[in-house]
Image (cartoon, rainbow, N blue to C red; front, side, top):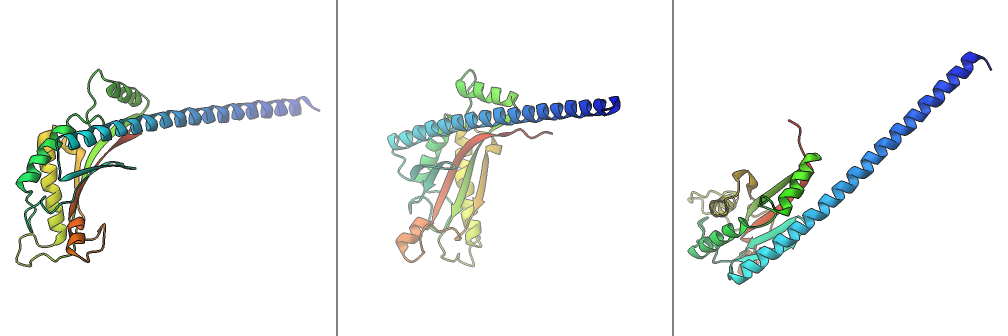
Length: 226
């Protein structure tokens, strides 16, 4: 074998070794990153569980009868599903609902996943995650729903989409005013009659379909570069 051939073979072996090392390096990065993401996900789930127990117990203790609290895969669902919640054919909350929404707003101000306190474990974990390229996002999504009864053509409400959106807006305003949360943490949607929980075949069923759902969720995501 000529010297030139031996040199070429040696270069190819060295290049192959370098590629192998690079592949190994990137695999290690992926494994470490995945393990970190899994840890953050588990921590997030614990925070959501704690927040659920906090809200559930306080809603029960304060006898906030118009609200039901459920732990769902997406987070925590507060559902308003009661004929006494809104004025008839209106988006205005009744006096009873207004009072209870004010209390829920104050509860949100101390809900762990929505408020990261200084010098507390959540804020330290969130700060550390931020250093590694992850940001903590928490939000309150409010959906309004109606039954399929048509809105009076002469009504300023126009249609069920508008009615459901305005009811969601009224709920959001009460929660925002009393919680001290940032406005960007809130969003609303009017779903109209198109996502019923049961068939609109009776007065009882229509009462169930007329509802407002408050979904509280939070979690980590990769920080967006500006």
